[in-house]
Length: 219
Image 1 (tube, rainbow, N blue to C red):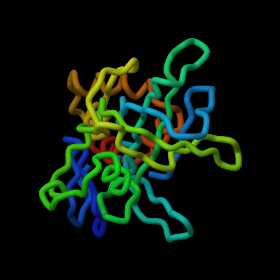
Image 2: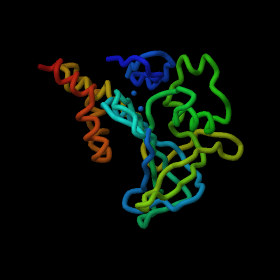
Image 3: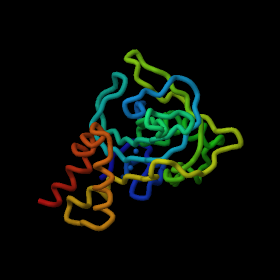
């Protein structure tokens, strides 16, 4: 499937492609570490999960509805612990776009501490941020919910590190293959990943353009 007029990244290989169509993967902000809210302030963080939330018709800040392809990035916060001593975690939803005005472009640029080159914009592999360290700024909204507002490079630059949570990348195209007559061990593994996602993300995926297209193929 493709949507004209949007600069995006392709999810089948979790690669950003700066062009005039959507090809496949992952922002409004959201957050929260389980049932315990992440405190406000700047915290050390490591990305452990990337989720392609698929495409839906959505409006944004009063704009008319249009196809919007979203991705979710999840971080664990090693210095903040829940009551069971697991690290707290948070996440943020992004429109899947490397347009220079997009939140994803701005946050990745800050995280990498350098601008995107033309070659980067032709194909940026989003999986590069899995296991990558950074610092994130958390603020609470009027409801008291934690939101990721900024990302910063850590002292000494971003490095890859192990996480307590499994490091995974959920690709909606691979997941949907399970429902379009193209089941594989990889698509079945994605079904297991799906069961571990927050319920609202599951609902989004279940109603996405990608899932509807897969179900039509199965019929």
